[in-house]
Length: 332
Image (spheres, rainbow, N blue to C red):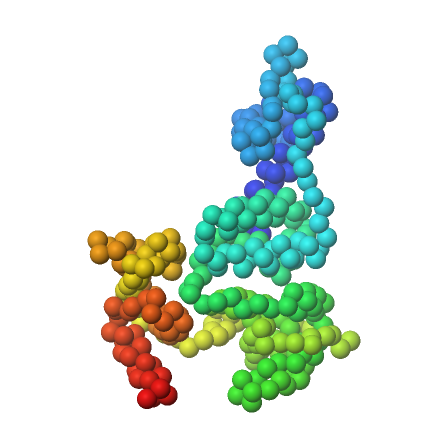
């Protein structure tokens, strides 16, 4: 867990203790609370301000009794007890929401999920397959989300923790059929809007393979276990070798135009994290951004059809024209 998340959990643990002390009717003051929690009195005062702001806590100071109290005796900070599976489900959903368009409903939902994750004890979150993390930007937001069975994630997570060998039916695109694989699962990672499993094929430790999780079904353990050599570092492998898509280092300047008929819809969207979006005088909407993801933008533009026009780069304009010509041959 990174430093920022760890500090947040310590703070929320302190908040819960302050709530307990105030509800006990002992009228604690900042000096008393600071001594119990081994922090400075000004830290306690900031925590009390946090209680007032975030939880609408009705806290007042009684000058006669020289301590804090709740003006509403029935007030308390609500908490929830979650099972490990429920915690896992929340963090999975939180991870997917990071790559959704940030509209008002998603922003509110992400804040709510963040509050729930923040109060989960560290021993429940340190080993999560989808550990709560800092905000991150999707490499490309046009790509649709792939829906994967929750059971697959839970079974993989358990197999990785227990170093259990698994059997899985895996869709091989070259053969256009499922094949039965026996794998030693090492790590799950997220890249370019998809989840992947890093794993050895049983009996072959020369090089781990990368397997797309959305191509898996009928996953189960087979009662065998494996060991990971001490000199094998997953992080080193991911940095150097686990690129799941072709390298493309050319940075393109994309310029898209949306017709005035859908201007209201277009102007409110986030198409890319570094975009510049503008409503022009003629009623059309212009969106520009820089990215290396030529193929992804190409596929998205095709899916939108007449709703978007490509102005730049010339390479993308040429690709669109060639595709239109190919399609046109079927309707001559």
